[in-house]
Image 1 (spheres, rainbow, N blue to C red):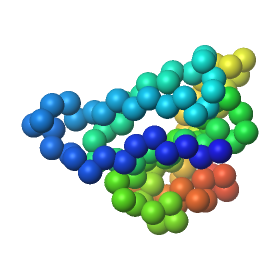
Image 2: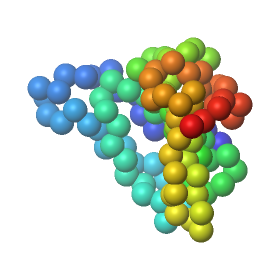
Image 3: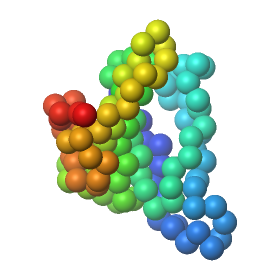
Length: 108
């Protein structure tokens, strides 16, 4: 399941915080933090891969298509319901990956 969490065009931080809080309860897991902060001007996706916790998290400039190489994608690893590692697609946190390819990418 892929969840859209944000897509904010307003990146003018002079209006206040450069972060936007988004609340999502789409995952249905009360043990997971429901409110996250997304930098303004970015879109965010989460893929729970049939589980209770987000496995893949992607960010791109708002308006970027999921099939374009404009995403930075991280992969979370859990043990006993606790986050134990975060790795990046291609080993880098640059906006150069394709969200649609997230499951087949190499993470380090």
